[in-house]
Length: 587
Image (cartoon, rainbow, N blue to C red; front, side, top):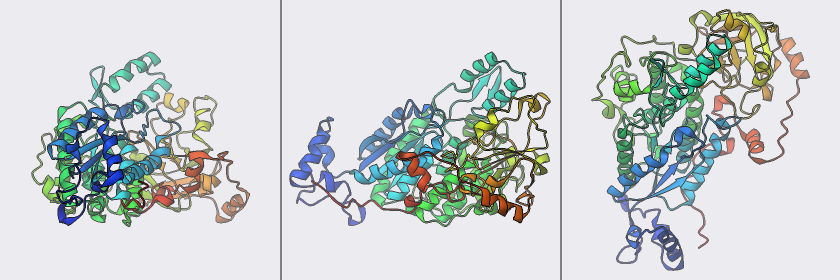
């Protein structure tokens, strides 16, 4: 029933005792307890023969619509694990769905990472398959798995089918903002908006634009943590189930090879992901998530790397919000392997960076074929030229940095100076944005503060606030907005994000007053508040931190330990890897 014929614990490759054998291969009362309770699920004694035990960490939940089909994906993974001779055990972890959770799913990404880490470590697992969907679940699971450093492979749930409304493709998120602006401007009725809702989300899956969910699925593949080509299959395409089954087979081999996240998630892998994100026109949120993940592995990744590494990378994928098409089109055009092959052939990739296949990323994508050059353009004929990706800004308004997605912004506003119109919270702005008497012009700079990691808390996706209704009715389509919050990857506009330090901790954003002059200079990578140092010192002496009201619970913990945007918004006590060793066995 347990152990080898001579009573010893079973071994895996390299002469190591399999981790799960300390549970299921144990002798005496302890082994009997572990095995007998598992048998109440109908598992026969044969599964305790020393085969690899594979955990399937799933963020399935009906409260996370993007993840609501993951129980079916888990079944496909289990088939693969059984086929390869493993023992699959599915377990739930926190589903952080951005679509429903308040105040923001980002508040709970670190809690998901913490839960996943502790559950993986505390249980008799030799490897783990990570099932994710909505945008925070992918980085959260990767962060947790990295801190345990057992063999792990990711399977994302896939995007929805293309939205269809009145004969046109519509993108989740991206068209929410567009339809909202049309309704506010009086060009679309509320009833028409209701009709568009069901046309936008017409299948299981996450956002089918290049929002943060699609971006982070692509980042998992670019990092080498997801099987080649598997980031883009639509959720309801049965090839999504095929790759899930393949991942189940592959994780068993990874356990035998002892291929761990620390061997995959190297500095070279992060550089590959950063350049790939520029090529696909990915979300600015990838900056925060990749920075946090690097911190778990001790990889030295700085905010300025996200600017320096992409200067030579054009955007070649024509997807909303930067372009025209959607993830279904991207998938059938060849998906991410085509993009990475283009980068590799241009010398913009580290081809030897190892992946979950056991091979280098360059070998994985060498035979990728593009089937639609409108969707995935050749590097020599890009959608947007090199240097138009994410830009990192510095200046007296953001001494620790700020971010702008150039491909989603208006070229005419890349260098702009205007009067600041300041709001202490997103809610304060929304309370007056429909007011016909609001003192605002298209040249003003909207400042939305109090939306950072500690200030909100959780750093919500509120920075791309809609323009004032009076301006929308006049035909104004964009203006400069600045915030210490984030923007959905599906969003667009000339929006400066992640201003650090945030206003709630006394960063310079807290000192801005309506009427101040602010200059945005994206080509020069500068964000400047035209107020003297002496005046700023005077304002700083008068500034008082906001009253947070939290006396206990998770939000207190979050506000106490969360890091700033430039450090990935992780908890300072979660940085680094703590390994998989369980210190005690009470049995």
